[in-house]
Length: 260
Image 1 (cartoon, rainbow, N blue to C red):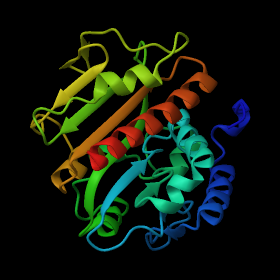
Image 2: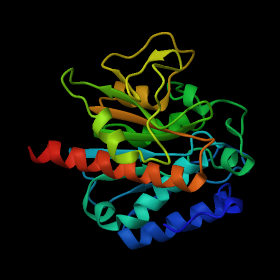
Image 3: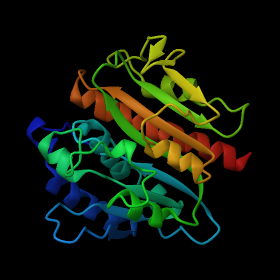
Image 4: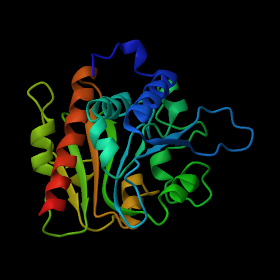
């Protein structure tokens, strides 16, 4: 992907147009979540590869939950444009931007003034309830949720694994990080213990005011849920590139797991 002009990074319409091109190139089905009655919000789209069939383990990717984290959405697009064959042949479901109005407004919150990443458990939420219907009865092998963090000192990953002996985070960060965008060195991130940029859990935390996307995906049976964060105060282009590198590193790791 070419360097991203800064005045484009919150252009939700340009992002949608680019994803329509990706869908055509990869032969993916592009659908829209139904809008709430009377809503004027931009459509929330999702893409499904032709390899997604009943009973097949699906890989899930998403970005744009928080509108003030643009590198996540553009990094996912950049990865997709470079890996059309993956999208064509592997069972993948993509939500390119779950909060397009927030992206346009450079706002963390959604059009209702809510933090979407604390609403994924809500059965009546107009976005999250429809999102859950898309994923109902899917068998999820890998989930990659892309974010950014204003307080971050580098990139880090929140890793939620079902297998106690599985440790992906450090290896994935080693492939995503660079000298210009290093691993976050903090030993505590968001009140959780971190080691060289990795926050790992095998059980769902119980102290949160609402449930994030990654935790609900875990509850839905996903084997590996990864939330990747880049530091939003660093170079936009470096952040976009790191997001794309992380996605491909995680996808390659899943390839290895499935071929073992």
